[in-house]
Image 1 (cartoon, rainbow, N blue to C red):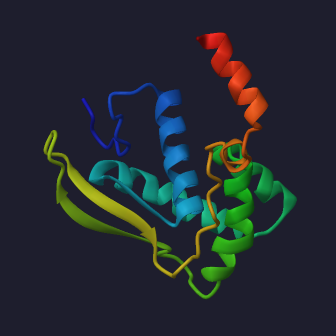
Image 2 (cartoon, rainbow, N blue to C red):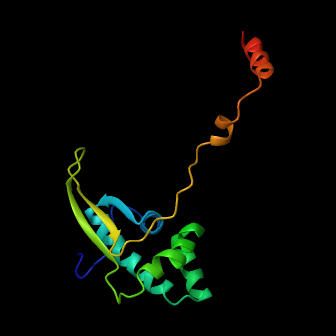
Image 3 (spheres, rainbow, N blue to C red):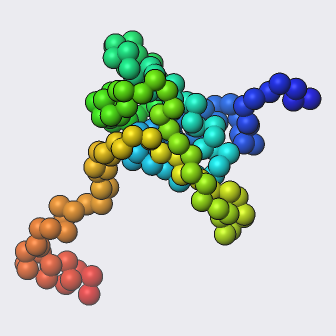
Length: 150
C-alpha cells in the first residue's frame, strides 16, 4: 500500500527519476521556463525551490551540493550568478506552474514551470558547426573531391 507516500515514481527506477528531475531543474535554470507534463512540473518544483535556497548561501559547499544534484556546470554557474540575484527579495515561492491543456498525442496535461521573477536566460550555445559553413571552400579542393567521387 502507498499510505503516506508523497513522491511519484513515474514508472522509473530511483536513479532514473533523480536524473530526470535533476535535468528538469537544470533546464529550468538555463532557460528560465520549461514545458513538461503537470505531474513532472509538480515533482520538479520542490527541487528547484531547494536549489535556490541552497544557492542563496553562496558558499563553496553549497556550490558543490548544487553541482552534485544538477550535474551541469553551466546550470550551477547560472544559478549562482543570475537566478539567485534576480530572486533576492523573496522568502520563498520562487516558481510558478501554469497549466496549458492536454497534449494531442496521449492526452497528458501539460504545464509550464517558470521562475516568478523575470530571470534572463543565458544564451544557449548552438551545437551546429557554423565555422565550417561560414568558411568558403577553395575551388581546387572541391574539384578534386568531385573528381574522386565521379
